Length: 271
Image: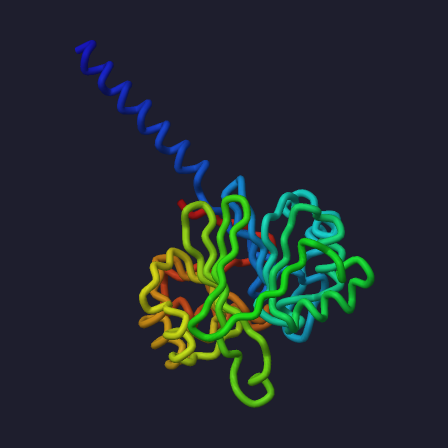
């Protein structure tokens, strides 16, 4: 009987160690607003499309507490390794907020397109012109570029934002690795199969998808999800606050396991 008790005790101990190890390695995602997220594994951090100092059009900015923390790079926004912006639209990237954060955070490397970096440098004179942590990346279809810093990695590639007035917009998708998980952020990508094929997404393992709600509500987007962005965790964003209840209900009808954050600065952990 004593031996049985010892075995049970050992199994319980191993189980508790496993749980602790998993918890330490878990990826935490904090919703900042719109398509802005903070990804962290308690050691390494990436922020993407998160410089949202104020509301714009149909979308909210960061809440007041988060703004006060971001401008001094403290609390959730301390020790961020990489900061990314998919494109220059104001509900994804606000240069004044980015300037304040980059001034305050000496450890963060900011990487984005020439269009975004040009706006940043114009608004952040004079320091941004020579700031060593501001990087411009130009990518072409089928030729992604990869950056690593500390324990995180990001692969950057072009995805069209659409035609007409959006045809000349530099718009990037990001495949990020944090906490051993691969996270795809597609910004405001158009549902254009050729772009996703050129990026090689049909052959990539994706653990977590961060995508606009339109991919979950329109036939063209649903087809793209099935063929190029299959992921066990699908996080739905870019939902206008005034339409939140209606759009969320529509998404969950067809995607009952989809993750939809209820409020800004809400956190979820993924083991």
